[in-house]
Image (cartoon, rainbow, N blue to C red; front, side, top):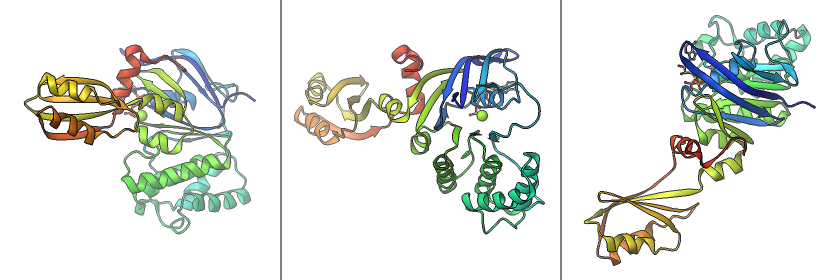
Length: 312
Ligand SMILES: Nc1ncnc2c1ncn2[C@@H]1O[C@H](COP(=O)(O)OP(=O)(O)OP(=O)(O)O)[C@@H](O)[C@H]1O
Ligand SMILES: [Mg+2]
């Protein structure tokens, strides 16, 4: 069986903006996160995969077939666009029925599927209300339901949790997990590492139009969080204090910037107490301290500095 998605050397420029710069992508029958900051090229890629946009160079295949080729609606692929908006005068049920018709789902099937999907996304009690009265979260969930009509083998979602509060994000995440469990391949974009870690089994990180790392989520996120940082502000920092901290066994490196110590440690080791003791024993006083989680931006920097290669 061919990969759900296979793309190689995708290039797309808008005027003088190079949105995609030779992107490769390989997605199997899995829940695959497409992670990157704003402007990285996620929507551009997704529009190419769904046949809405032609790349300047490169090829994209969905289940072995050219993503750009063919006419008519591709019923094996579902698509949820970025921030979907629906005509507000329709009810959720009517809307799914209309989309179902577009996808060529027969009437009886449409009724069953609509009911099932409303149930899946937790809108069973709101199916007969007008969409204009839906919250953002409900609209996003309706968008997810819409992308699942016709039971596609692959569902492509562009930032399904965008614009939602934490509760709304959690709801949509649950739905995505359920879709994965049903056995469809899912490809979803996000700019939140945490989110991808929560729902996806695989991830590709895109930065400035290029894939910088791809693989199972645990592997990638382990490499991403290889170290943690503790930042301590010390009153009257001295050489003695620095070497005292350096002697803590879990410490990998200590950087000094003014009165601030940045202590790199092994994964998962919270050694704030040890740092505090070491500073105190060397005659210093800590006036502020915290653990710093690496941001996605740090991750991108780390990989783009050449520490990680493609497809590792
Ligand atoms: N229609 C367009 N015309 C001109 N430039 C565009 C167009 N669409 C996208 N771009 C540019 O291409 C780059 C990639 O945009 P894209 O929308 O693919 O990124 P994204 O990863 O989806 O970002 P976001 O997280 O903000 O949705 C950006 O620099 C963007 O400004
Ligand atoms: Mg986008």
